[in-house]
Length: 194
Image 1 (tube, helix red, strand yellow):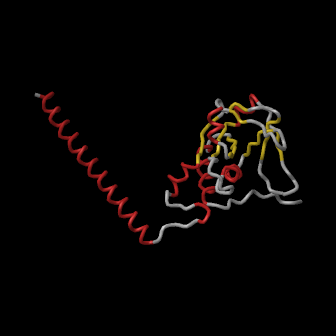
Image 2: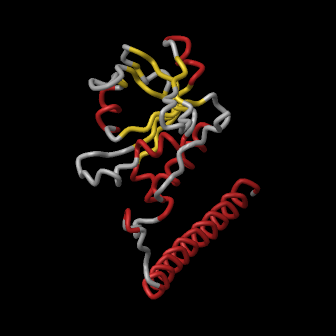
Image 3: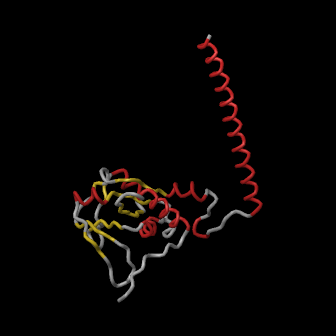
């Protein structure tokens, strides 16, 4: 018997998007849909079947597969904005017929389920969305994309110093506010006792 395997993620953005989507779907019976047309889908609130090829909406149980389809660094096209929709499978099966699907010719198990010939209204079923800008919050704005070039050590030290100074300033503001709040509460406590 042939062992089916899942797609291997190739880039850091795919890995990060898959982890974020998995975190959103944890504790739910979740299905994932990776897309490079996220703004359009969110604007319309619908997943439309494909015009070319199979007329179906494809969902997967694997956030890794959804991240592969959502990664826009593959096409290098500026007009696309990729993302992963995390949908509730329990509510989906109440309104739509989900059929398991597999393409045996390439032997990669995408753990897909499809909804044939129907538009899917995602508004009632959406658990969360992972957008490409969310990735930058995880691995930083200095990531350069496909080349996977990171900062030099000198640049990293400089950024670390800037971040440390910023955190110190925030810490000082919090300490000052707590001191001020404690002083106010002690004054008001004396006024109510007397």
